[in-house]
Image (cartoon, rainbow, N blue to C red; front, side, top):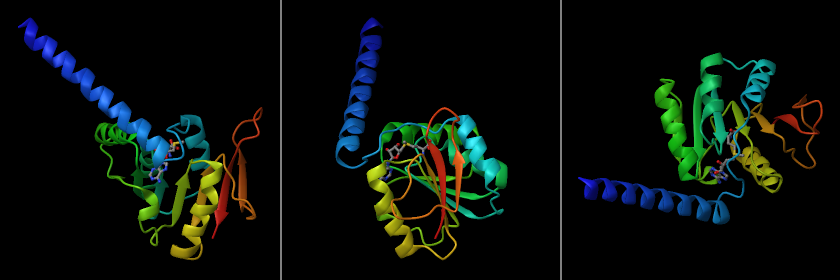
Length: 179
Ligand SMILES: C[S@@+](CC[C@H](N)C(=O)[O-])C[C@H]1O[C@@H](n2cnc3c(N)ncnc32)[C@H](O)[C@@H]1O
């Protein structure tokens, strides 16, 4: 009996170590933005300031644990699609989706390799260096009027249509762009 318990504990530790290694390697080589989830309060203030149409397509590029999409679906009945490249946040997103009985689709994938042409809204919380490449992708693929909501990071040389102050004491904002 104790041997079985030892084997279970050892294999769980091994699985955890492998998952952590995969996450660290992914962070270094593919995902240049670490997993830092958007705060609950911030998600609420974004959703309060943008009225999304029912059944509109909302993408989250690097959706982490998927909570932004799940909350947006609850609030506006949008169709949510997320891409996440790190295994641990992806597994959390599958768990939250089940708990919340959500219909959002979350794919374990690199969003640069995905087509976003049917997007009405795109949300991201990435990294300053990624914003220009994301803007280029949207300009190339998406229809006129597609809105990008970026947590914290702005796009150089592009004027946002709206800026929401994230926090009175910090200089971080939410930037909304219309393409
Ligand atoms: C700062 S977190 C934000 C998570 C979520 N959007 C939120 O606001 O709570 C950024 C996430 O983007 C993911 N990511 C970065 N580059 C990616 C890529 N090319 N494809 C898919 N996911 C990516 C990271 O793994 C990380 O989980």
